[in-house]
Image (cartoon, rainbow, N blue to C red; front, side, top):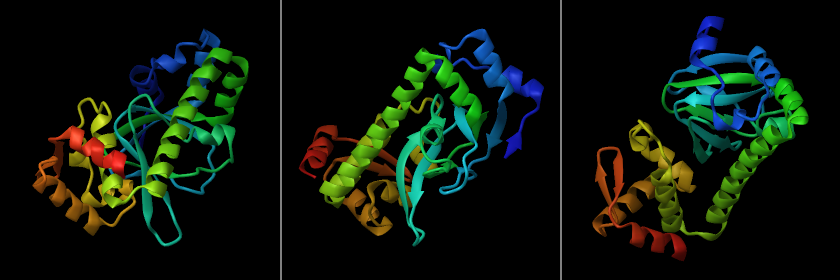
Length: 231
């Protein structure tokens, strides 16, 4: 983890994302005063489930895996966060601790904004608050989708949903499967690594996907969607 200097902060990490465009000049200045730019290396944790949250992170570039842990050490991957997404946004509205862990799956640049500064701006700027609440609701919708998949679908349906999700996101310059292990994929589907590997081979045999090293390419999207619907 590398914390940048103030000069780096101003040159690299200006607030240019669409959600910040509703801020006044004074509010932009307040956000800048309450933020710190941090570079996380691949594999470093941004947040740890259950620890106190005094800040919110905004991803400038990179990919971040969001997941929850249980007492046995098992993980359930929830989603991939990328440039323009927030980490720890729920701490502004909910409990003062991180409800999930997150780890950089590529080198990732973020700026950390003091949670109280975010609260102040949210209370004073309705348009900005609307944008942030909308983003928060989008993350909640994603969690409901994960819950439905885990509750109602068999293993093949879960894996189909995982592949459809991972292939649907605009990762820009990143090749997503090159940054995920088979265990990561299994943890998205809520199944064992062995089951994920076995099902991927079945999908390949049936002409649904193509496997090349770590890369997974969808060959027959319609059939994969049908497996997802059947669960």
